Structure formats: structure tokens, C-alpha cells
Image 1 (cartoon, rainbow, N blue to C red):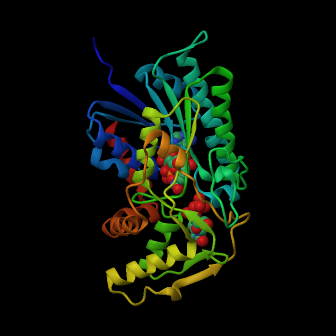
Image 2 (cartoon, rainbow, N blue to C red):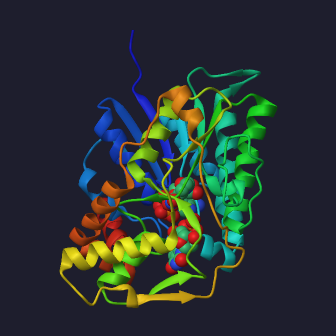
Image 3 (cartoon, helix red, strand yellow):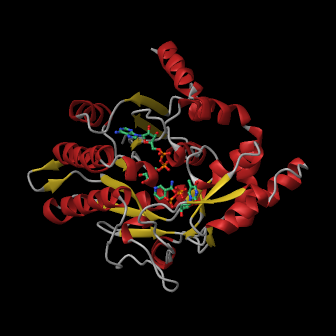
Length: 357
Ligand code: NAD
Ligand code: TYD
């Protein structure tokens, strides 16, 4: 009997976490195929996938998750076992400035994927065997915590920012497709990720880049907001385990109990960089407390007991090790950073894409 190669339709995998996920899967499995659908917004970067160019297991498709015809065609052509949706507008500050695009991609894009999957996978009342939709969501849908307690999967969804509201809305649609039509789904809700390939609008790469260049380090408000940091590869491991073993219809929180106030992160980066580069100009004098983000969530903290107990997931990289690896990567990939911050990367991947066609 012929055994079909497992096929993943993964969206948004030219971005930070998706890039890492594609690398993770290709390292782990020989006999898979990943169709990577990405619109290449400012946050998507084909340069991230340059090292796997020519690997036939990875098929890049330039396109939008809101495109009905394209998504229908991809599902028909590749018959994926899993659809894993990473694609999103992901930056809270941008969502405060321009919420509409967050509704388009995060809500309407998700609904389009669900609709096209239902169209292909539901026959009468029977769902095709072995198919599953996985939504990569965020702990931010739960809102903010006080000084104590953690988010569990039963914490009520209570988002505050336009970003987290759009992600929460998408989660509700995913659950609705499960509850209404019986679609096989999982939702993962992970805490803040850090690691290589993260666009330098997010706290850690922004601070690394600014400190290295002796630019000021903008800390919002008092800097005592707490985020629960997870090394990106540990998140990828969790998504893979949920795809393979997650119980139908379940939500899984993902986090490594690594809660740190923002100011601690910034000071850690300053300490590491000044020592490694032997540069006394990288010091805490660069810190500049600026006006706080509107509606800024004070604290996030994940209780990961369920994914640990049910699937045996655990984080492998401590913050102390992960932050050093991350800083090393940005120091070794200065050209990537320069291209990304100058907008050069847009030209770079357009050129690469043109050459490929
Ligand atoms: P990112 O912004 O780095 O990457 C997003 C990717 O999606 C980019 O490659 C972009 O080109 C693509 N994209 C955007 N709009 C698209 C569209 N309409 N159609 C197709 N592709 C589109 O984001 P990230 O940090 O890698 O986050 C990935 C997912 O993980 C998101 O769903 C995010 O909500 C979730 N998440 C992120 C974090 C985090 O700390 N970064 C934590 C938990 C969950
Ligand atoms: P960010 O990386 O944008 O992730 P999120 O908002 O999804 O948690 O921000 C992490 C924390 O760092 C958040 O509390 C906001 C804060 N922050 C700053 O203080 N200064 C900055 O320049 C940025 C980008 C973030």
C-alpha cells in the first residue's frame, strides 16, 4: 500500500516564527512537504529561507491568505493533511495605529482558510480522515494579569489591543467551525517569542540593534510590564506536537515560566553586548523612558501544565542560554539586519522571486 507523504500547508512562514517552524520541520522529517503561503509583507522575508532554496520538500507560494481562489487551488493541488496558520499582522503598536489591516488578515484571512478547508474536507457530514486545521494564536487574547496567577486554557478571553482582539476573534471562528461543523482543529496560545529572524520592531531585536549602534533604547512607561519569554524553537516544537498529537478541538497554552519585566530584558541586552563587543558606550545611559503604549497590558504569564501533561512538551532552552544564542545570531547577521532596517530586503526578495519564476 502506498503511504502518502505528509503535507503541510503553512501560512506566514517567511516571517519570524514560521521561518523557524519550516527549519524545525525539515530538520525533523525527511518525508514531508511544506507548502508555504506568504504575502511577503514588511515582516516576511525570503532571505530567511535562502539556506533551504532547492530543497524540494519546501514549496514557496507568494500570495495572500485572504485570496479565495488561491487557497482553494492550493488545497486542491497539494491535498494538505495539516493547515497551520501562522500568517498574521503581529505588532501591537501597528494595530493601535491601523486596526483595519489586522481585521483583514487576522480575522478575514483565517475565516477564508477555514472556509476553503471545510469545502475540501467535509463530505456531507463526514470529515476526511487525518485532516486538521491548527491556529497559531497568542496569550494576548486573555488580556492582562495582575501581579499573581497565570493564564490557563479556561481563562476567559478578554483582549485589549486591536491586535489581540483580532487574534481572539479568529480563535472564536476556529472554535465555531469545530463546534458548528465538527471541523478537526487545535488552537495554540503562546507567550512572547524571541530568537533569530525576528523583525526589529519587536522589543528584543530592536534593543539589540539600537544598543549596538549607540542609539537610545525606548522603554515604554516604567518598563515594569512583564512578558513571559519563550525561545522560538520551543514554540515550534509545541506546534509540531499539537499538530501530531493534539486532541481534537483543544486549546493548548505554550510558555516556559520565563517572566521578566521589560527593563530587565533591556539591561540584560546592554550587559551582554557591552561585554561581548568590549564597548563601554553601550551602557544604561542609552535607556530612555518614553510615553507608554496605549492600553498597555501589564503582565502576561502562561500556565503550560496542559501541554506538558497531555503531549509531553517542555521547553528546552532557558532564557539565559536563549538570549545569548539570539544576540550571537544578530551579531553574526548584521547584513540581514541592515537590509531589513533599510528596506533593502524588499528589493532583495523581489529580485530573488523574479529570478525564480
Ligand atoms: P511576523 O509578523 O514575523 O510574520 C508574519 C508573516 O505573515 C510574514 O511573513 C508576513 O509576510 C505574513 N503575512 C502577513 N499577512 C499575510 C497575509 N494576508 N497573507 C499571507 N501572509 C501574510 O509574525 P510572527 O512573530 O512570526 O508570528 C507568527 C504567528 O504567531 C502570528 O499568528 C502571531 O500572532 C503568533 N504569535 C506570535 C508571537 C510572538 O511573540 N511573535 C507569540 C505568540 C503567537
Ligand atoms: P513587543 O515586542 O512589541 O511584544 P508584545 O507587545 O506583543 O508583548 O513588546 C514587548 C514588550 O516591550 C511590551 O510590553 C512593550 C515593550 N516595548 C518597549 O518598552 N519598547 C519598545 O520599543 C517596544 C517595541 C516594546
